[in-house]
Amino acid sequence: MSDLLGIIILILFGALFAVSEISIAASRKIKLKVMADEGDESAAAVIRLQEQPGRFFAMIQIALNAVAILGGIIGEQALAPYTSVLVALVYSGPMADQISFVLSFLAITSLFILFADLLPKRIAMIMPERVAAKVVGLMNGITFALTPFVLFFNSITNLVLRIFNVPSEREDIVTTEDIVAMMDAGAEHGSLPPQEYQLLGNVFELEGRMLSTAMTNRDAIVYFDINDDYESISAKILAHPHSHFLVSDGHLDRLVGSVESKMILRQLLKGEPIDLTDSMLQTDLFYLPETLTLSEALNEFKSVNKPFAVVVNEYAMVVGLVTLKDLMSSFMGDLVTNNGEEQIVQRDDNSWLINGNTPIVDVMKLLDISAFPNDSQYETLAGFLIYALKRLPKRTDFVVLDNYKFEAIDIDGIKVEQLLVTRLPATKTEKQDSNRGQS
Image 1 (cartoon, rainbow, N blue to C red):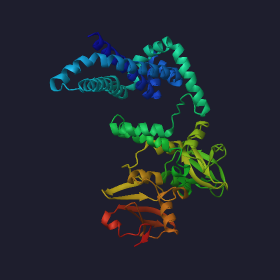
Image 2: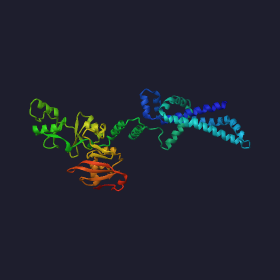
Image 3: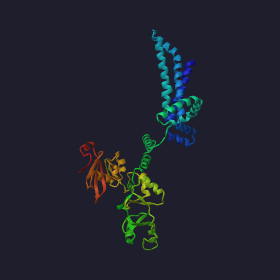
Image 4: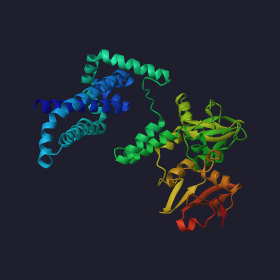
């Protein structure tokens, strides 16, 4: 009976060490950090143990091997009388002792595998942080008690690692890919709502999207000339009720400042004629190069108190205008809206009307296309069509990609205003030119 009690105790100790090993190794530092910030000292202790795990794992291996050896010694003695009786019931030949020994060995091994290894490790993998926080104090105490053995084996291990030029400590670096993987897992599990998942995904795309994908293009900028008369200024304000307008001297590349609509309104309320005088102009315009990413542009806006920026190219020519609201909308706004200014309108389940200046990354998300060919050569859907055709498109020109047909349906001069994107049936796609075509 004492031997059976010894086996039970050894199994419990084996389970304790197994669950401690797996839980501390599998605990995520991010979650432990959250627990520690909430005042959980045990979580902080687990983080410290993970940063220098050598002594802990040396203790675990010493303990597990000791338990295994003792289990083998005690187990055979404890179970042999019982297995002998069982064997005697069915066999009494010269191999009875050997069969009894084999049965004892299989029984004790099965008990240790199941209750001292598999079950505790499964539990530790299911909730590693919680289990690690529970056992870390006890493990630190046992490590201290076994200090001489731990130091000996840990020193030899570190020596071998140095010989083979292997780091002796774990370096935890959380990468963007790690965070995205956690987001994907949360979305699949349902713990991360779809709206938050899309928002976080848009934030991570800021570094890869260029400023041109969010700005108002040059040909759409409404501005005043400093010599404009009352009728011209009034007509532009009525047609485009913006809060700020650029003011040029002759053409858009010769800017002299900007003016707020309320300044012009103040003149009107006073009964004064509209006059773009120097006192009304804000001459310190904020300029940004078009080579910036959206993330870099947001950082630049943080350093100045300006509502908008003029976007210029390397030749100091104005190529666009971007507001802080434009940048925020690039990751806060919905892809498809219903406000009359949408870039993407879904006609039915298999077709969309998409503006030519829609960023290609938005089209990829909408249609679930993993990649566009050589997408570093263009930024918009119109740019993709031009790149694929190797010429300026004409109306009804189209390109087929990933079972989608991209057809130009609205051309203004040389500008592709709108495309019709249609999902093709699989049987029809096989008959299409895989690269491009013209109806």
